[in-house]
Image (cartoon, rainbow, N blue to C red; front, side, top):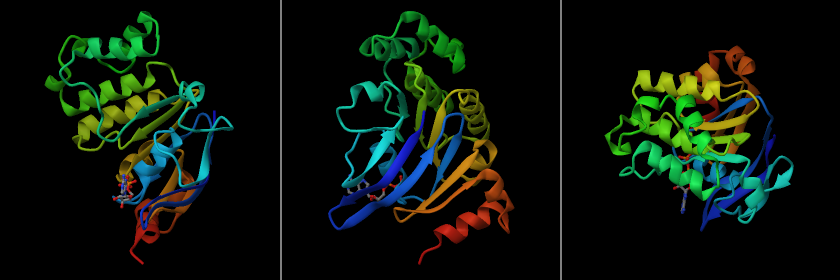
Length: 233
Ligand code: ADP
């Protein structure tokens, strides 16, 4: 299924957080959404999943326009917010069962996802007792419980140590078949390691949309591309 932004824009008072964003991503692709802090990544992702409404322009999932009440469409979307809002006082399995009950997801799927996200040994622990990497796994687990074909992850490896980062990267890669995955990051090496495509955003505007091979072929590589596209004007 495709994700598409058409002139997607968001303005807060006088500030333009996202300025006429245009791109599309197709099934089987992992697309990295790269930009410095404050570039407009989270705001864009929230509009794509229908959590906030654009000031102008549209977001489309599978060719259908996303709006606040697109309940059916939202069943196709898994979303991990930047601050991973899980109930940390709950046990892992209890939390996932709670989310499953809201969406009428069969019990069998809970164990399937626990295995898929490597949480088997942690399932009977309270979420707040887990390392940050494992807490992120719980966030990803809740995002894929309903087996969505679109996965949108806002800075899924932020604040993790290098080993935890690597584990989450592998997990994201394992979720790629049959899905369209868009994830935001400001970590170049991470995007380079797992993405097929790269979007660079700065000051709310799309500055680059290229394949990973094109980005790597840029003189000076991906870090030079990022610097050139995001330097202050
Ligand atoms: P990023 O995710 O790339 O760090 P954000 O999308 O969070 O960037 O923010 C883009 C800009 O929009 C920032 O300058 C931020 O302060 C502003 N912004 C985001 N959300 C709001 C809001 N609810 N009200 C006012 N300004 C906001």
